[in-house]
Image (cartoon, rainbow, N blue to C red; front, side, top):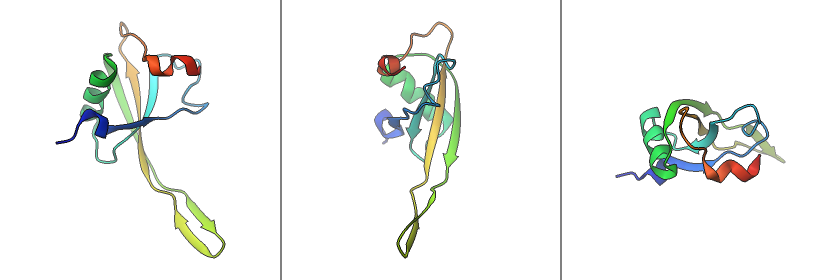
Length: 97
């Protein structure tokens, strides 16, 4: 049985994900086999907020090379979570803007 913490792996904190115009939108790296319903339930349980919508993105690993050795970075899945209108913001992200 997976817990909510197995679905949400870590927040994505980049300039683009923290744009000031994107209020109530938060980006997380999630498990590759998680679906939108599991992501919604996990965010609502962990942070105590109400989720309006979830968009997911499968990110392929970049091709990398070190000398003669070639390989790929690991692939990952990102979720952009938009909170409902009356929901409080996620406190984890508040000091990062």
